[in-house]
Length: 271
Image (cartoon, rainbow, N blue to C red; front, top):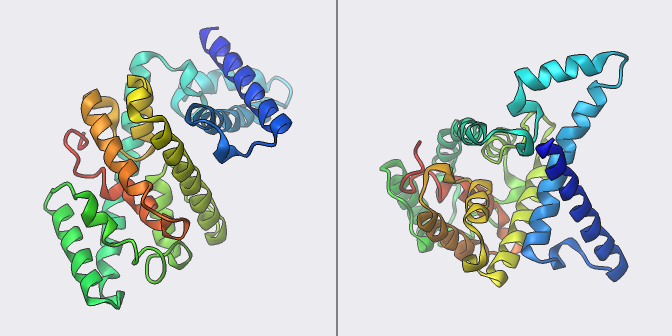
């Protein structure tokens, strides 16, 4: 019942935001950070609930749905219906799943180094990959030095190969089981939304976020924040925003890869 009440409150808040957008002709990226984040999360929750609604349509299927929800709460229920222990355990499971794609993504970055035409960029890419392979957390300037590589060939969003997009989708907790053109579209859309959230968050200021909002923001961007102290999370989120707010729309492939580059060796994130 508590989960239903929370979901209903979220639905009413989402409706108020959408009504405000319609009445005042406001676009998604023009909303405040908390309004944007609320709509983003609510859309994902609704998608999960719709699946339950569809499989419960046949006669007497609702009994089966209740059994499935009991047996598979992580896959079928939204966070409102998880216990506090389940929230920690399930977030750990999801992070372990996305961590499985990290070696594949880093391996691909190493393989494309010879394809980078500029000698200076090749050196920077080699240095970054070496640092990460040796367990070093990269500096902001190490990542931003490569923005040109991610704006066009070989790592621009439109130049990514199907296997690389599948690995990046897993790192973003998106389904990889789609045709290439849909994978590319979803990755572009998801990364653009995060970029818009980052701009709104930079405007608001990290200091105005509650501890839970900080943890959720870090987790969305690739860091397993459930076992990291709040101040460490704020520091990491500040590094992410410095990178994100420095990027143009054509360079968003770097932000997509940053989910791995910035989180993989951060202190406390290897659980």
